[in-house]
Length: 231
Ligand SMILES: NC(=O)c1ccc[n+]([C@@H]2O[C@H](COP(=O)([O-])OP(=O)(O)OC[C@H]3O[C@@H](n4cnc5c(N)ncnc54)[C@H](OP(=O)(O)O)[C@@H]3O)[C@@H](O)[C@H]2O)c1
Image (tube, rainbow, N blue to C red; front, side):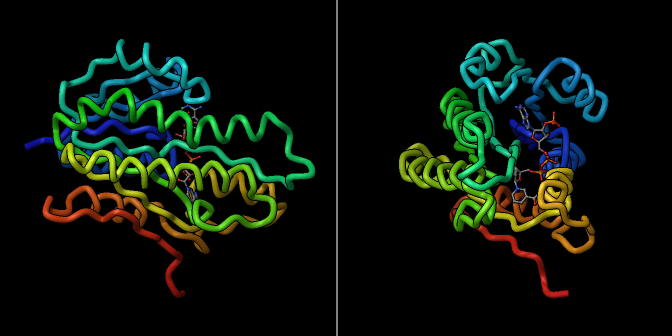
């Protein structure tokens, strides 16, 4: 039976590929787009998908956006793939970089999860957080992004315990550096040459996500770390 998936970040990188794989198997998609123009792009790419138009930098707008979206009563999975990164030392990082990363990478996933949980419970569904190796270890230059992702780990871990009695599974995927537009931007900020072939293929991260979603319900993949393979 086709499932329903709510996906953020479906316009690029890991989120776009996971949306493609789920659309290819005939599942129903509800896709978050930051504005009407990006929603039009997503509708062109995924003609049967329903848009949920909201800028995740403004999580206070999520409640109205969810209320306005064309949503079924049961949602099998929520896949939080949207994210932003801005590197910089704590000595230099402006307040706006802290606020934007914590808002988009942590507060928005928390608020979106809260708003759709009744539908996820109705499906005995699953919430998947695309975290990062930076959610486990914080390196110099990565303080704000890593803090947002450490927070996302805390959100997922607490939610897993809270939702188990409701039959909802919670999974965190921790990818290492993955060849997407975000990684190209990171290299720009690091002033380094970007060779996508040196990094994880986003399709491999998507395979890990789909494995967690498709796992039989007697078990849950709570956490999965995806590292670059030996070359
Ligand atoms: N690439 C890596 O090396 C890597 C490694 C570890 C973890 N991750 C994580 O993996 C996830 C996917 O990253 P990616 O590499 O696929 O990045 P990406 O190609 O840059 O895609 C990010 C997506 O997030 C969306 N997004 C960002 N800000 C938004 C906002 N304010 N409102 C709505 N949507 C917004 C973007 O929307 P637009 O398309 O409209 O810009 C885009 O679709 C992120 O959570 C990232 O932190 C990435």
